[in-house]
Amino acid sequence: MLDLFPPEEAECNAYARRDFMVPMPHFNSWDELNAHLEAECRKHRQQRLCGHSETIGERFELDLAAMLPLPVSPSSIRCITWH
Image (tube, rainbow, N blue to C red; front, side):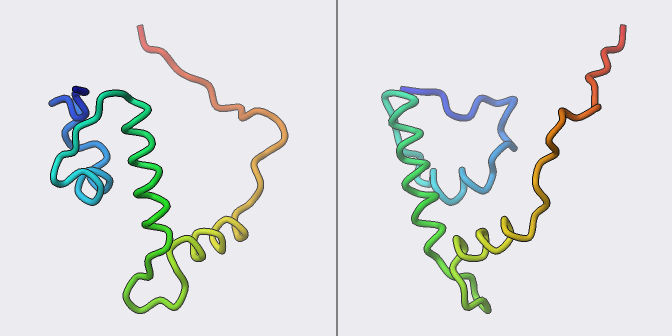
């Protein structure tokens, strides 16, 4: 059985854990876990939030269309290491 939520990551991915992992399912491999999460995300995209006429997936596509494209050249952001 996989240890999905080690103590140091207890607060990570609270949404997915609350909505897709309660009660806690059991998986024999990471592939099984990934397939489960993908299926749950696809189901989630078909839902409509209260007060909205579009599904979550339709709203996501509208958001994507409104986003700026990624820059062509690599970012000038560099990793800074303190010694």
